[in-house]
Length: 112
Image (cartoon, rainbow, N blue to C red; front, side, top):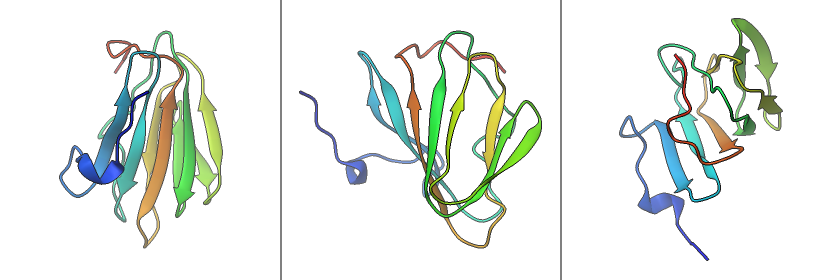
């Protein structure tokens, strides 16, 4: 068994951004906190092999897949397939919190 507490981990951007909670050996997942106007990353990225699921747990925003924007109100779930370039935008006036789960632990499986 492995146990972590979200409050013991840090966001990449200090007070927002990506925060990994579990990294391997069989799954890769965490949370993303975006303040109004922020994006998950400057540019979209994808994965060659793995899929990635996103659950919009608090607030709403936009899921961007292959340069197309999809409304993502709170409660939305997206499964992004391998090779689909993706990003998330917070176009609201409130914080956006998203859970992400990668289908497998392959930390080097990333395309820009």
